[in-house]
Image (cartoon, rainbow, N blue to C red; front, top):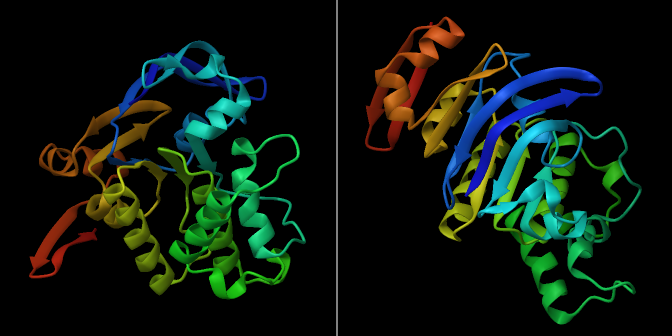
Amino acid sequence: MLEFCHVNINCGLVPVLDDISVTFQKGRITTVIGPNGCGKTTLLQCLNGSSKVTSGRILLDGEDYLAMPLRERARNLSFLPQVRTIIPTLPVRTLVEHGRFPHLGFARRKTGQDIAIVENAMALAHVAPYAEQCADTLSGGIRQRAFFAMTLAQDCDYIVLDEPTTYLDLSGQRAFMEMILQLKKQGRTVILVLHDIGQALRISDRLVIMQDRKIAAASTPKECLQQHIIEDVFDVRIKEFSDGEGCYYFFD
């Protein structure tokens, strides 16, 4: 379980989030949603050091996450950020292999197990056909999947993904959500930031809803719908339809 306990967070030198307490349950898919500027990305960026925790505690399975050496953090939690300003001129396979670095020794010699994990990550992310192509020559959607494969190659129990469907077309988004469900079946804990509320409602075990840089609610999608929290926070009306294949949501 990942727990934020009365956490205050700065972005640069600017205080952004104050007294945040929220729990992300182990083995579940939890999606953070909220209007633009509400603090979703800032909340999760303290896990990779891009935002600074000035007080409070973050516990990972009962241990002080912020006190862990960076290498140990990277063995337990992988993080795919929303934006990458530098795209490496590396073949996809080499890029994905970077995900194994926290597990390798100083010489970074890969074992057969490391190679198998990299191959499996590329297969799951559907980038194996691009293994020898350089990442900077790929389309935005395929490149995003390559970075996702690198995140998977860390082989962590906790996977944090900030706007992972950026650059993906509708087919790519559908395939990505299927991958997330596969990770849950493997027992992984997946934490997402999504702007698509419909996707969040369909895929999530729990929602963390943010408003005005605070936690407005943390509950199941069903409970959030019943309590009209999403409608209040986003100022919309939600209509739900269902058929034999699942539920669909429309917003007015």
